[in-house]
Length: 485
Image (cartoon, rainbow, N blue to C red):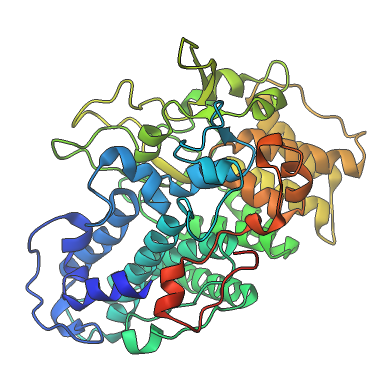
């Protein structure tokens, strides 16, 4: 975290958008110091807007360390596909039929991550912390700015969106690594020797950030609610619903999810082929990829990196007969002399096979969508003090009927409903942001499920966490390594 992040900020370029947008110079920021020079950066709403746009640009397009190859952006950048691909292989979603040690994701797929060969975990760590650094710079800049031309309304917007981005980064870091430093400043002197924070402390910071952000953000979307490419109060509520589920605050998880679902003027479950389109009302928040350059495609980075990846037979066999998600969201890989037959994810329709340079972007990269809220509300309804099994079944049936399946009866037992929730989460959210991997871990089912997969033998439970990058520990001897590494 320290070595790359603070060298970047010390150049004085981060908030000018140079790193994250690729422009040569947007603002003239001359003085490299140990804290943000707010009187230079946040003189006006327009200048703050440049920095805020850069925050989003980094999440989907990367910076100077991530843009060498658009083909690799979806695997190298945590927020553009990196979590989906790494966690999907670590779980039982993605695999390579040849089981080859030369396969790009072999160490994740076969549970062979080591300190010497950490796979993509280091890239997730470094790009997540860079996004957090960008957010911290904005947060500090807003709180210290004094210019009257930087209006109160825009201060709130920048602060709220940056807090939510920081919370997003820490959510994935604590779930994938657990032992992580909690950096809340861009000042090198305050972060150079941070210890590993407890998961509880990280989760509390995530909740604090989201709740603070909620007080600053609007309930509306820019552009008449169409593109949904900026964080607003509804994304914050949706993220709080997820975090509350993970921290077993089921009353709060139910309430936050219910608040989102209840806004039927903004959100609805779309037809399967329209879920990931730019006009989808199922989308709560999505990231807009750039297509402006000779190498930029109209496909999302994840769709480019996902093309030709194999879904495991176990996942394909988990689809019920008549489940239209199998036809709509997967595509067959035709076998040949060197390529085995199988199925690949196809939630995004524009990929390596049909992209256009600079072409129309009919889909963006979905970060959060309404179907997850139904599944969270269903699970919370089974677990909260005022549990309601029938209401949970109703939520499951909303998802199932959309997929062309029959509704579940109210005669199911509590255990059958719990199992049905896990099944619907597995099928509805496959190959999206590591949901399956995180679900297996939070429900304590990971060892039971993964230890039975032959290519993950001999199974070791320590692989449920990724290793803290060794060079981070060398730079900060206050950090501790996860057990088993």
